[in-house]
Length: 105
Image (tube, rainbow, N blue to C red):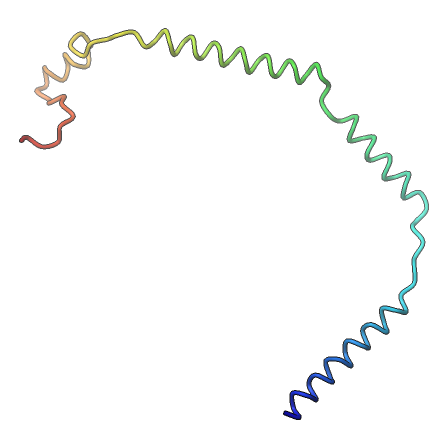
């Protein structure tokens, strides 16, 4: 029991020493022109951003690409029967089974 009490006392003393050291810390003045440098970086970041014209141009280009892709996709989905396709003729000529069934029942 005494060992735990002495270890608690040691921990408390260490904490008190740290607190005393922290009480001695004093305020430090900021370097001169720090605010000016911060304001300059904020201003530079605002100037480096994209203008509204570029944003609208990008959005219009993306929309146009989506429309063109959908038109190509929809025009390419015509009803094509497998009997008329060249691939079906080649597989029949080679004697390959075109069924998706894996096992014969």
